[in-house]
Length: 284
Length: 279
Image 1 (cartoon, each protein chain N blue to C red):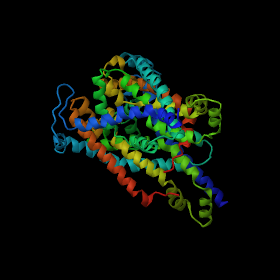
Image 2: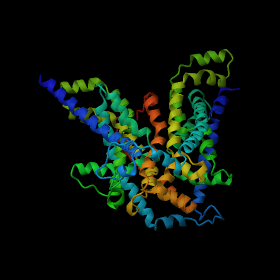
Image 3: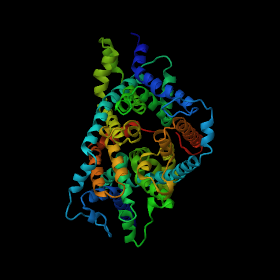
Image 4: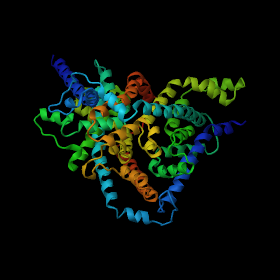
């Protein structure tokens, strides 16, 4: 058999999967989003009615706002935390290895169990967080039970999970040539200057990567929100709303239209960030 | 001398940061374990009690009365076992195809592969669900397992990069000796890539263990629940009353993951180094 044909055979499973689980579903999604389908019964073609209804749907705006607001705060907070942790752990001091393991933990440990534990930590009466605040003489808020404190509750969880990308940052920090720091130190640059003018610029490719991942995961946030909820419907993130429309109310057409809108938002944000790349991301 | 003090001061500051940070990172685990071993009168008390005394084990019994924790963990393991072998093997197969062969449209196909990494999961989710329900396979593990046998895009991408670093000499020698390409893949490439395959196997396991949305969509029958679904329904059913048993169940659910973290961490670290992300 010719070598080129063999190569094609090797990739054939993926190509089949691409057609079955990507191409066909995407084409189907275009049609479904223009129907009033509810899984049982027939689907009627209703054109762009779903999209029109979405733009008049208060919950659409509310859940989108919750998600966007979370993204605006969570992305810079988590990137800053991860950066701080990585820079501080980028040395060979005693015990650094153990601390690295501890800080890395949240990236492996996730899912429902962690969300449940956080719900208990944030319990206004018997939770550990308000008890700790109490020791400091602060009366803690009602967290998830107070609409105004739902977002901060989610941000605490986001910061806890922020240093999951630790080893990616550490690998990047290791790649920065030592000579750069040495010559900067000889020229009299202090720690802050070295971070500002050497470390940060050299890390911009990683920061860019984490920003894109951050946008995607913030807009697709589901598990924590599904478990934690929040007072005043403040815990209904976009994907939770979409899930409910599809699998609790069986509004398949409507939910698929919601999915397309989410995709367009994520895609355009990624494009915008990618466009700004040339202004701030360092490349060799 | 002044330099020396500066160095010491810097170290002290760093260790204070490490310790407070670690305390913050470990607090959820500590609080979970502490609650799991306390009776209600020690759980619902102000000020809080850090260390259970006496240690109380009944929460585990109560947790098993609400949900069959071990059975649900076993269900997840079944899915993971049936899924991961195929996912790793097929991803390696496809990655090898992209790394070593030239064929028509190869570059375009690889760009498509990369594009699907950005894929709108939310868009394909509903049509895929409808497809499985037409086939009568919802409320079974098939939709959670079968797609893995077509390879996972991120694994293909990672392994293609990994295979590209292998020297070609041995493969060429095997061709001259009359081996076909599949034999080369099976006898040479797979054994050589063991560390990378273990790494993606672990990623795949954690992905399955921690996934909620996929399992939530497809599984309805409580007998088929996974550990994630079991915990979610436990949490929804009982609300705020059963924190002790709930923490006991969460603790058991996290044990396999914590084991992986402690004993297989080097594979994750190596994996990230192998990826060598550079913009």
